[in-house]
Image 1 (cartoon, rainbow, N blue to C red):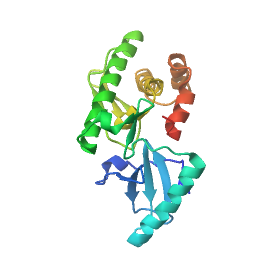
Image 2 (image 1 turned 90 degrees about the vertical axis):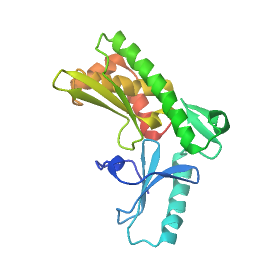
Image 3 (image 1 turned 120 degrees about the vertical axis):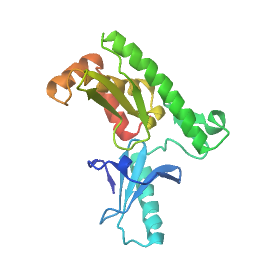
Amino acid sequence: MISEKINSKSYALLDIEPVTYQGFRILFLADSRIPRLEYRLGTLIYHYPKQLQASKVYDILDHLLIRVKNKYAFIPAVDDQFCYVFGEKKSLRLLTNLGRKSLKTALKKLIGDYINERVFVITKELKLPAPIKIVFRDTTRKWGSFHLLIKDKSYYLSFALSLVHFRKEIIDSVIYHEITHYYYLNHSKVFYQKLQLFNPEFKLHQEKLNAGKY
């Protein structure tokens, strides 16, 4: 089965890295009684029993991936030949000739340049102070975060690197979401009312994010 419910554990804090298998970016976690897949921020998280034999780990994963492909039409963000960049399928050869590590560097620059420019434009449009910094993280925990510094009421923003795979209007939706936290630090009714004013299609964009529709 594939789980759409995200638990509160911060996978970014674990000393493990996702691997690419059959074109999917997969994080392996031996923390569950029943093997299952969970989708989060461009990564499939594979939960399986710790006592499971190594050969069985991949046998079961193969069956689960077939279900994902058939039922959810899941499209990996990166495979052996292509990579989704701002919602468009790009050739890896065009992005880099130096391997996957260099690809990550190239993608980080692309998303960094775009979000830095858009945050500047959006905060100016809303007549808000700009953040003191913008941080980019290779995380499977959340798309973005707003961090308020109580001492001087300044703030900074952080975003997931995997946003680079999505269309720009979806990325903008995440930016508007985090900047709306300047007014409200929670996810109350008034928060979403304010967000609706800034980004009327935020619900549609959120659905596409959660479904991995680049």
